[in-house]
Length: 337
Ligand code: 13P
Image (cartoon, rainbow, N blue to C red; front, side, top):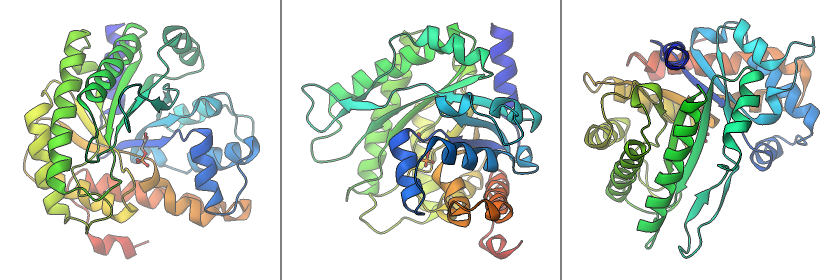
């Protein structure tokens, strides 16, 4: 089991690479498709996802892909199962295993992520279908009263239980506590909340005997609420690194940030700035959903004739984020082919 976990971590954590999240739940993918006037049918989801995952040489910059449960059992037009397609691309298949969130009782405005019941059995099935790692997302929204202490403690506990169950099944857990960007809170408040959340998460992981070497952390960056003016990549890098240095043990091999509603270029520039901010004990990389896919979705528009431009758009974002892994990205690269 330890060897299996090691092998998966090594395959996921590679220089110049990051993770692509294609694990939008049914309501979320419907929202993304609606923005380009496409109906979210099972066939449209299969067609879109198999098209982007077939992007030639995607494996140069992407080490793992997080899939939604439905996609794990779907095939490309030529009948190749999607997990098999990823393996052929040199990419590790992963799976989102949480079942979304609900309001947390007695904590107005806070939510709790569900999906622990039967998780060990589900993981056995996902493994048979080819998944080697998993993802679970907790969310924390910032307002005058949230997140409450209760929400911070309860979500951390659930996240740690998920991670422990995954490791017991030989599946590498991605631990994702997302402090939401929504609102008009300051960057300082986002920093304060992120620090408390990460402290609590690592306490819980310790209580549940999670092996830190065999997990990846997927946090949000420290940014001001989206109703305020954006901070510069330098400021984001400085504040984010200050908080993760205080809270994330060096035994964690890689920190794969989520994009959380940042524009594609913004997410790349912020990651780049972090990798220019001096030597850190972990790999600092990406596990982006929207920031990698947004331009590809806009190029696709539901038309199979747009295959080439869709794949080109995804490849370009993957490549630029690959450059940001080394701090080698520049705005000028946005206009290069
Ligand atoms: P975004 O990068 O769009 O935030 O998605 C990442 C993800 O997997 C959220 O759970």
